[in-house]
Image 1 (cartoon, rainbow, N blue to C red):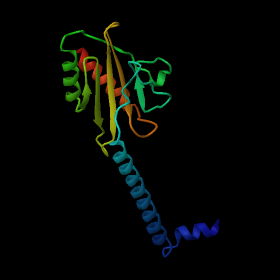
Image 2: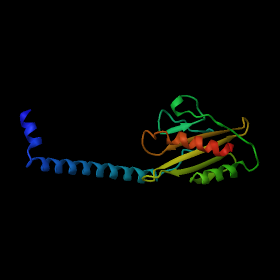
Image 3: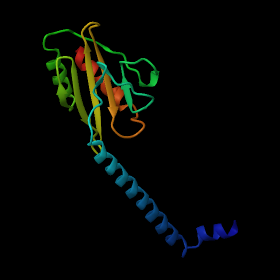
Length: 167
């Protein structure tokens, strides 16, 4: 214990330890940034999940995804949106996605697939919706392509989309 105190108070040893600590922290941060860059690049590969039996895919316990199609787990569930039912529904949806800085990748009369990129590192998230004509609902799904947690980003995106849609 006394030796450790001596190392911390010894003027000749202290700058060396400080330099070693600074270099170690800088290297660790550099490695973390490199990992984030590679994850961001890998998120640009691939595409959205699409429809399965005319429904959006379930999130399956992943906490980087939210979906209104399945009410199985509260952490990943969001309420569907009541459809307005206009003739230009898909066009209106595409305009909202563009206002939110998203890019529509594919659409047809009842389905839209879009992507959003994060500010930092440009991670790609998929945003999908399906119009259920019979129930007059819009089923929504948003998922990060990489990682296990999105810190609520996808839920906020869907909430924001709903606000735009209803305004």
